Image 1 (cartoon, helix red, strand yellow):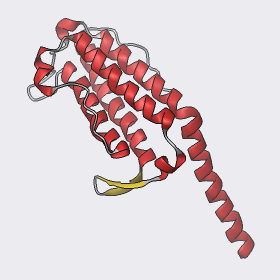
Image 2 (cartoon, one colour; image 1 turned 180 degrees about the horizontal axis):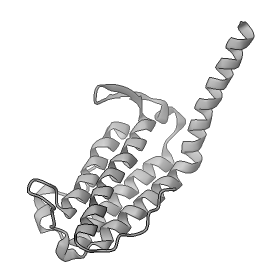
Image 3 (cartoon, one colour; image 1 turned 90 degrees about the vertical axis):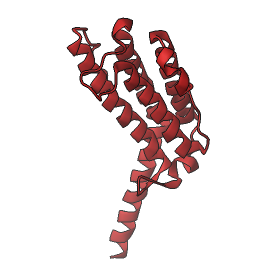
Length: 171
């Protein structure tokens, strides 16, 4: 019985170590590919269609990307304790495509910097988010998931406007 318990504990410790090792060695590359794909999708839409929204009440193409930047601001503050704003919301109505791309680049670069500098102790810190207890590492996965969700909506917008979508990059 004691031997089984020891084996189980070793397996569990190894699994946690493997997950942390994955984050430290590979997640920066995963995020880099994520942000490159998002940028390609954002660049594909002609500027004249940045205000396109498929239905009343839906976010425009531009608003989708600004929402991604806002989410990065909010979620990274759960990691760092400091909320970094990437633009002034009052200025958003005057943004052009280049402005939105620059904001998206800045927000995604901020996440990449946090990933590259995250310590194991920071990643393992427990926080409460949305009524759920999780580690700060999980926030990095939420950032990617949220961006993928809105990028997918933007891909649909491209198709609706007859714009060829960039090929999928997901590895």
